[in-house]
Image (cartoon, rainbow, N blue to C red; front, side, top):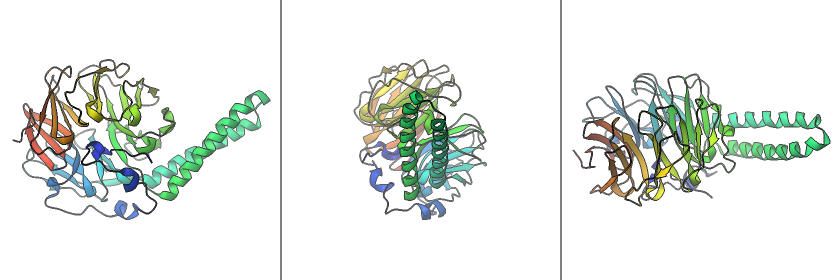
Length: 381
């Protein structure tokens, strides 16, 4: 069975063998999807997978449904009210008030008050039913086409129908297993339009702020259902999805249609970072693989990362500074917009998954040891 480094998959020491942890018939997500996150005064010291800085608040997400916020630039952290206790893998705010978090069990949470309180919008059970409904509709359309098809047309339609029936059967089996697949990343263009990506080709979109979520998985050519690990958008509005086995897709119409990118590398991608005011971005993943595009993802150039460690999260300071965090305490820094990087190793050598610029020379880092404030060279402040 394939395995994936789920957002925290991203370090060898922390890699979750997801084949055993979230796709087993013997494990049910029903309780954790309905059980509020347990309160802990030291949650900020435990596993956290993503962090975002708002105007007056920092928000981080991680294990056991923990969502933390700080209103004093990381000096103290408080725990938000969260209705689930699953591992949360990513968070994204479209504004200072509206934000979404995703995680295991196919859960999508929303906050309308800047991360203080959260409600559940969607979960893996609803995702499974959405996919089944779409598959049933497609099967019905093909059956209708077959009835009126000429002899020459029938062969192709019968082949498509057979594939569609297989897909429907797979979806029904997934529904029997339950809410077993995690969402791994989330990105909102604005407060209404957003996307979530995840395991086995999960791709859902909303155009109404998450009141409804639609399956967009059939809009990308991902026939092997490779895991989709990351989604991002360049300043010039090119959307990019990257995942397992080098799969990469991009959209230039706001996510309505997607084209397959000729990926420069066939290993897993774990992050997409917009890096300038045009169409530039970085993509990074296993074994220190790091690539740069200046045209919205059509063409990628390899960058020497100076490391063979897995790269997991990155941040851009809005000028020319970039910091990338990774496995085994690796911190990469660039001062030239991502053309070159320097490597340093943090003393604790623990894995880190997400990093965000606070101001000049200061960043917040989250990962295996919770929250750390560091300088641009990866040293604790």
